[in-house]
Image (cartoon, rainbow, N blue to C red):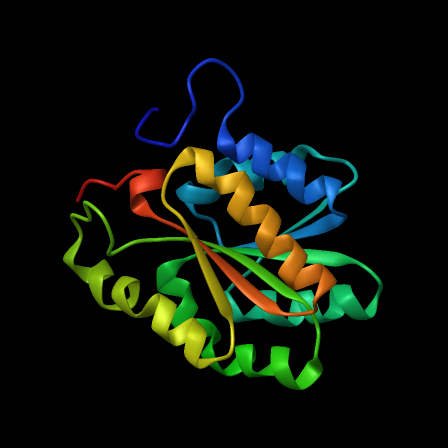
Length: 177
């Protein structure tokens, strides 16, 4: 495995994850640019049947997911752990609005972090999400990603829950500072 989570000998977990999301009807990919989600973002931009939406702030992705559901579609929010703090108020809409919400969060302030500015939100991410009623699951190793993502897709889109998949720095690789 490379420092970016690429599985040797063929497909990468990010490519498999993109294929899984598309196979489960996700057509809207909302994101604030992030290297941890590069493959998902680039694949959604290149896919003529997907809508890739660059956000100015992460909380816009919560509203986008609500709109996707109201329109009969499915959306996913791709963000970094530092963006979770921007979403706190909007996350309250998931329970009140009773719409499915799925987000993949690339973690910072986690395993091997070298940037001291990333620790506070990185360490608070899971607690903040859970405090807002979001179910949190985590993938630490490449062979866990598809299994964890499949469970999250079921919880979000079949049970109507708000679910966050945390992609650990052990999985995506720590950035140098």
